[in-house]
Length: 175
Image: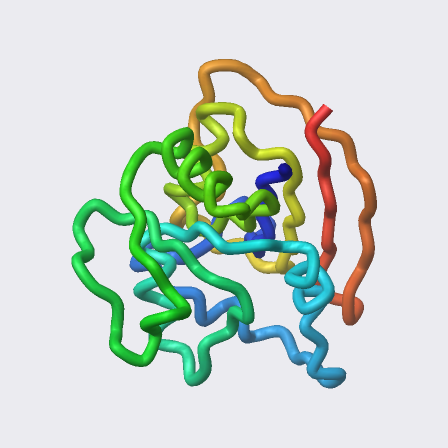
């Protein structure tokens, strides 16, 4: 029952600009129109747990990118856009209660997304794998992927690959 992070960061470890902007993610030419393995990754996922801020960014995309159910972790949202009913459900609680609820619904392979959500799962030592696509840009400031932890967590590198001669995709597993 792995909880897996799949995310992109800048070289200096940011997942978004200070204002939440992610336009820099689209600046690398992708002549092959590759999804960089995201489609294959999604085949092994039961559901996605994402934070509210990430959800608010994703709903601005032209098309909904997720073929699996999405649970948005939020204490402030009361509803989802009508076009996403049946695809998105709101869920409240701390990471342990969220895991318990989703596991009771037979969701065991979880994709954890969103800076604060990832950090909260990490604080409770609940992330089993991380796939981090490093984009060759220094933002200088922004929203960091990682926050402070009570104690260190160790991961080993399972695989590393260079994609389109521009980004590095590292797959880590907790040890």
